[in-house]
Image (cartoon, rainbow over all chains, first blue to last red; front, top):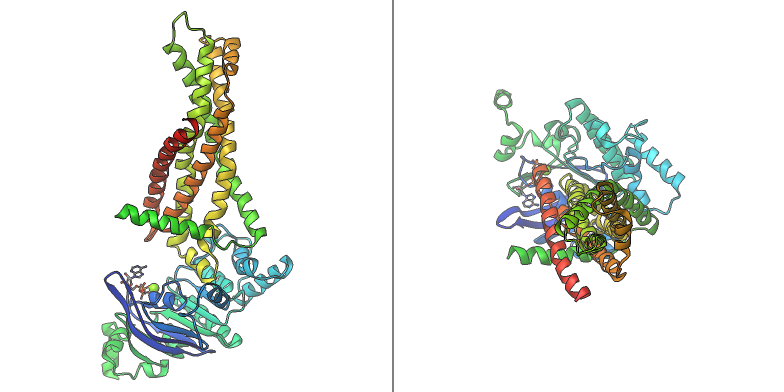
Length: 250
Length: 246
Ligand SMILES: Nc1ncnc2c1ncn2[C@@H]1O[C@H](COP(=O)(O)OP(=O)(O)OP(=O)(O)O)[C@@H](O)[C@H]1O
Ligand SMILES: [Mg+2]
């Protein structure tokens, strides 16, 4: 479980996050949704400590990440896996080396065990026979899957995904979404996913936090989202005229 | 103001580069890779440039002292000292600042804008140290070798040019390059090359590491890296010369 308490974050004069609080439970896919530029990436990066909070606190299973220093943080980091908006694979390394990388850096396993573990993770994301290709040689969807495999290599307790399906076709998006949800259930991870894709929201949004302009405007489940009368949320979900008419008609 | 800010941030960056290293086995492999990439990869350009500049230095010196009372072997002496003192260490390092510096800055800058550095940080890896330290060690180690090779090839180039044109006959050139030889000149050049190697790797690493934005900014960082490391090389050339030769 991850709890964020009243987080504030600004860059120079730009107040990006304003008083955001929420609780993300284990074994669930927690979604953060919002328009482009609303502060989703900044929020996720603040939670994992790539940005420091200006005010507020981030708590991992009753351990305050905000109050930790050097070594403690480094240890907690080994329990985190993250999937970045652009995959962020190391482009000088092959697929297998990318997945093996966290193991090479942190585990005491010998080489053949590390390769086995990497292969296991790659199979888990349904990606076989790509081990010796470089990131530039595989498709965007495959890159995302490699990035997921790398994120789960060390068996993390916390998984963070920044727009796992941006730039993917709807069918592949759903495959990725379902994969993230399956893994979350299987290992009882606390998973936080940034998205602005309504298919994801309806598909895997067990908990949804809606951010607009850096503030939390609404939270609930995907079941509740369509019935909400929050105006900003509705503007976001029913963005097209067509959907608005559909909603008015029903 | 901007200058003070950059300088302060540069020293904080250095502190991170030299802090908390990764596993020795991985670090060692990285150094070997960087020596291959940065050092061996620069051998070609160093050889070509040294040969031609050595040849030109010899011919120019010869044409400039065409007085019968000055013996021909002095051309060898002058060419040797120019190459040992200044050309091989400073000019070769300036050329490497262009080649290696832009390479380092764009490699690390690209990693920054594609969030690869964030990925390292999230894993709890000291990204500055992991990415830059092996390059620093490789450059400090390999630059003196490149400079020594350049000295040899440069003096050889002078010999080929002098002898083949007949401007400085071979025996006189060979006598000249041995005449009144001061070994400390070589030591002085090697010390400079170590410092220049350090400057190239850390300054370029710095500009790459603090890139923000997209591919346009990566290009800018890489230009910045070349300009700033060249200027620092010239500045430290002056300082070291005053310290070591005065
Ligand atoms: N490192 C930074 N320095 C300064 N400002 C930043 C930085 N990162 C983000 N911002 C600003 O924070 C705001 C929110 O950006 P963020 O990347 O979180 O949006 P987002 O919701 O993830 O959008 P998208 O869906 O397009 O990814 C933007 O106005 C952006 O300019
Ligand atoms: Mg984003």
